[in-house]
Image (tube, rainbow, N blue to C red; front, side, top):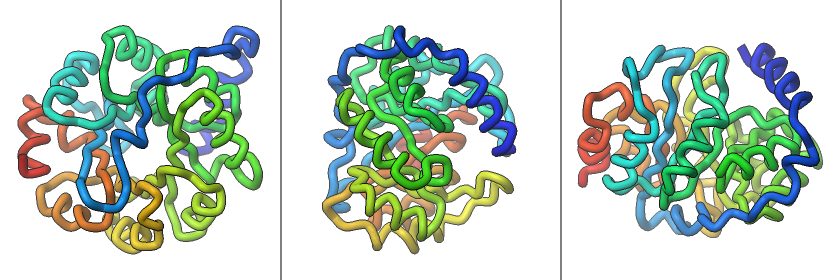
Length: 251
């Protein structure tokens, strides 16, 4: 699956107009303020998607903008917008629509960033932050991507899948580190990855646990070792995502 995604991304990058993308306005919504550090208060990021390769379609006719508004009102701290089209059913137009709606909380683009032009594209579409994967940005490219994002007042959230990737994120001085509980190739969920890796993140850095968090017990297991969690399928496959959010986090 990843090979196909990367092929798609490189084709998309080839169509980007570099002159059009540069000179974007800086972000005014700082995701680091939304999450904080020190493992004191648990915040919730909400993943917005129409489908994924493992759970299938979230709900027929899902209106992401309407759902985003209700979840913002219910206390979500940021919205993670999946813009990969083939497997997640998203696109940059979803970011644009949320930006035009005037969302007050930060928008985080979740996609497969392979070139810096995609960072400018993300900001122009309305993203305040973007997931960066060490597996796709090796060597100095991760450092450079973090600098380019910061130049637009965006926050690069480094999404790690293993201990070596976490070390790379720490070396790159990433301000926010997200730990993926999902194996991208198999879809297998292992919350133990967060439990093992999160204690290695200094309290001065924010850490998120992402994907596969489905029950109040899952939230309880993770609460004391992270600053935030990212919820998606567990909310979007229900008739009332806001009510389910309250059930999961105990509010």
